[in-house]
Amino acid sequence: MTAVPVPIPSRTQFVQDAIKHRILAGQLTPGQALVETELAEQFGVSKTPVREALKTLAGTGLVVMSQFKGATVREVDAAMAHEVHDVRLLLEPEAVRRAVRAGAALDAALAAAREALARADGAADAAERSLANREFHRSLYLPCGNPLLVRMLDEVRDQAALVSAVAWAGEPSWEREADEHREILRLAEERDADGTGRALHAHIASFVRRAFPGPEGAGARA
Image (cartoon, rainbow, N blue to C red; front, side):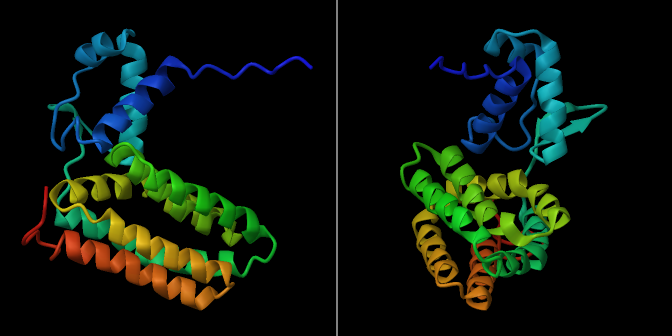
């Protein structure tokens, strides 16, 4: 049998993934300017894929585009963290409740969630850990049966990952959050929809209160 070749990522996708990883790993810090010519030289590409990558990252909330400042890494403060997590608190527990009630459709989601937990445990840096954590959450809300609800939660995924990475730089708390993930997964495996939803709500709420106490930024880590 002839092996099917694995598609090579486009230059834009390669640059986009590399910039995203550097942002979440803290190698590109909040507020830092993202100069197209410098990035193009670093990645050995023209400015076009860099420009397209930055536009896509701006769409996900990791990058801010300004007519005067150009592109910069999104800054994280208490107000931004609370905005992102307020959306999650309103939508994600209900999405997960519906997913747990989805019957057989939940089996694949649980397997993906377990795999994401393993990746988070073995992550080499904050970027990999944060992305694996976001994949854990997405695995559980994906089978909720409402594509619009999934898209709305997907829109804040990268911003939530950035909030986590910035918070962990100030106070590493991923071991606690990993334990909470395991409890959420246990409840989902038991098909306890309401229990899973409550545990997820408590998990999200406690993280943002602990990492960014107060919407006005008192004690917030930026």
